[in-house]
Length: 360
Image (cartoon, rainbow, N blue to C red; front, side):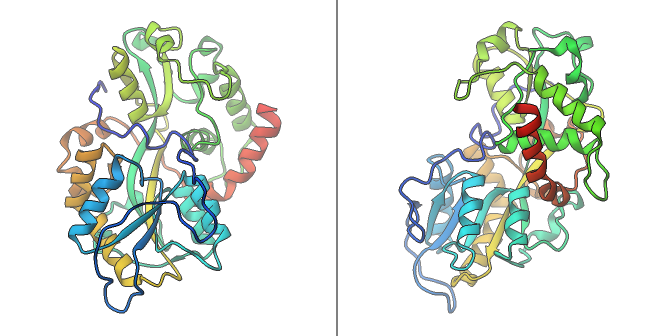
């Protein structure tokens, strides 16, 4: 799969805490937005409070303008997925949010299991493919982002490309890639994809062979100091030709640094991470929240949202039909089957073991 167009937002999944909640005391959201509109039905007054990593300078104005056309007043509380999840859990008995938007599926399961979300079936839910079903969980998935094994095709011959994620454990790939940080959603999705290949599909218990594979993969990676910027010059030169990361990061890096990126369609598939939307259970603006969710996840808005902001690809197939370039990108990548609910339950233990036994 050879693609170079910038079509997926660079700010999407790089960090679980990418945007700080500056000066936020509980119950005092740091927000963007503010449009005028009357509350719907018997809802309480005031704006709809949306907890989301998407309240940034690129995406927020587009969402706010569209919501204004729907007569919905919005305030965003911004933060990374991990930060917002922690805040929602801390506020569970006195939630300040009305809607949770754009948080990764493992974190969505975490807040759902804590009773923070109220079941709601959006008007577009029946359009979502079975592969993105979350069963009876009280939220719905919106977007999809493959965590790919990409490479600099100008510097790495096809015969030298790893055929699977497990192949990164081979000595010939020593220092040929940087493994994404395991505190990020990208890193956790990569870890999940590797360990799930060696896990009991009913319990999530990982074999020692799986832990040995992950250990070798992480230790084979080029080690970089914390906080150091990603060195695209070394990728361009071929010194670090492999890019295990999310699709938009790899494509944009190649485009910005003048080399061709290819995506390895790996044996066993590629882990996809999704984000969701959910209605907060004790929201006093339930009807407005439902109206917002119905509008936001609809095909027309999802397609225009991606076109305008390069956000992650929608899961709504009717929206994808309006985005032929994005659809083409995804067509060459085989998704890896993953039980994200079971993964979300296992992830805290997995991360603890990684920290203690692999990273030290």
